[in-house]
Image 1 (cartoon, rainbow over the protein chains, first blue to last red):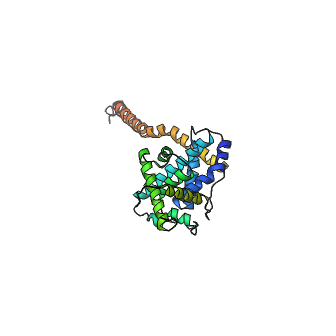
Image 2: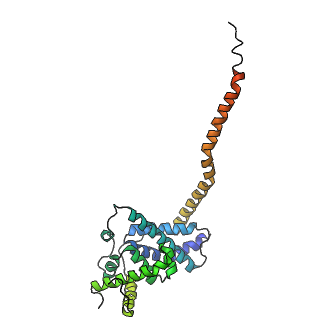
Image 3: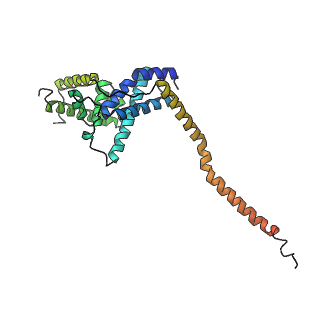
Length: 160
Length: 93
C-alpha cells in the first residue's frame, strides 16, 4: 500500500482530470462527484496499486470506468429510468457547441471517445476500463467515431 | 452513414473536436473532498471490512452453536430423567 502522502499528492494532481472525464460522460456533476470519490476510495484501499504515477493514473481511470459501466448496467435494468437524451445536468454549460454535440452521443460512446482521444489509452486499457471485450473495443470505438462525425456533419460543424 | 469509414480529414476533425471539448469550460464545480479526509475515510472503510472479515466465521457458526447447545440440553434432560425422578415411586402416603 502506498503512503498517504504519495496518494494525497496523486489525488491533488489527477483528481480534477478524472472528474472531468466522468462529468463529460455522465453530464451530471453530482454523479461525477460520487464516482470520483468512490474511485479514489478504492484506490486508497488497494493492496498493491501501481507504484508509478502513470500506472496509478491508468488504474484510477480504470476504476472510474468500471463504476460507469456498473452504472450503465444498473440503468439498463431500471425501466423507470428516463431516456438518456432527456438527462442533462442543470449546471452544464449549454452554450458551447462542443459540449452539446458530445452530450448527444450515448454515454458509452462518450467514454470510449474520451479515453481514446483525451487520455490516449490503447484498446486494451479501454476494454478493461469499460468492461467490454477487447475484440469489441475496436468496433465500438469505430462506431462512436463515425457517430460523432455524423453528428458534426448533421449540425453543419464540418463540411461534407 | 454511421458505419462509414473515416477519412484522414474526418480523423483530424475528431481530434480537433476532442481537443476543444477537453478545453471547454463548465459551470459545474467539482465537489471533491480534501485528500486527508478521503484517506481517513478509506482507512475507516478498510478497518470495517477487516472487522467484518474476522467476524464472519463467528456469525456463520452462531446458529450451529445455539442448535448444539439446545441438543445437548435435551440429551442431558433425557439422560438425567430416570435418576431425577427415581424417588417418586418410593413415596408412601
